[in-house]
Length: 405
Image (tube, rainbow, N blue to C red):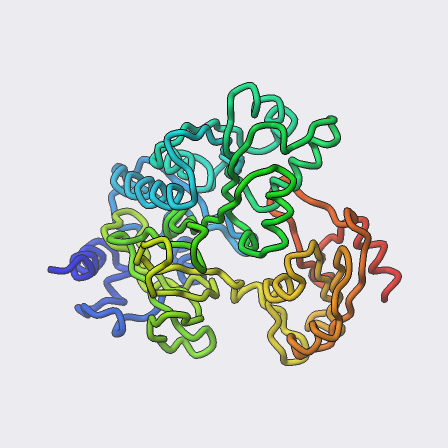
């Protein structure tokens, strides 16, 4: 039997949730999609893991929750085999992203609850690197430890290197003289933008590579080699990828350059497997061989379905605004529910308002700010604020927005 047939047989035998969906089917196209809303409902009926838990509770060695910023978190159980697979998938991704046995890596993601903590820690170890478990809230201490411990690399959110550079300068330190050689980012699309990458590389005197993962699929499952478009998937024998039209859910051919919503199906996952799971990630997928010599598919996340802003019947994706701004620091403020135009874009430096309006096909008000005006967070930096839903504007944006209403 194929790995997919084996997995479907396992799901059908182990879970009433999946048994109802599979009903003897052995091809993906015949099986309904799974959504996060359905997983949450399954979890409410049978807490904490839901009716889609397939392994006995006593076989679990860890519990994580998803780290999404909206909605109720979903609990994820892992058996020892699941965890070992996660480390293997992530270790290969981190190696592609430039980490290896010669590196001592400061791991600067939150260790509490989420797979980006201890699971990615062990995945970095699987790349051969030595890991320093820094976590979050240790910025000043980290600046002391980088030269003292010979730390050569940092793993954290895209926002973190800029935040840490600010803290270094406040302490009278030049980030570029602390001895780092490389930074791997995660959790925030954008490291592929030339302006963002250049800012980080110039501040620290390092190279930068992006990584990608999902708590409920594999915590890290793609790494950027730096030679071609996108990040190399390392899911291999552990997951199947489909691409669908986000509006119609129609499957799209997995051809080079296809763009759509990513759908994941686990292979050989025991505890909390996913079957035709609609990720809400919008991405471009490349299937042609990479200049680096690898032939694995590559992806570039372009945004999320649930981040979309609907402005006068036009869908606007925040990531598209970031790309049009060339990676400049910015914040988007949407008033009203439904959103009342114009969409306010606050950007450090200059921006072509006409270009944004033409590309986005909706009314956009661009407000230029002095460099350094917008806050930079230690964790993910919020860039979209919907005032009608109670989003709290940072002080600098709030003052500016009052003047433009």
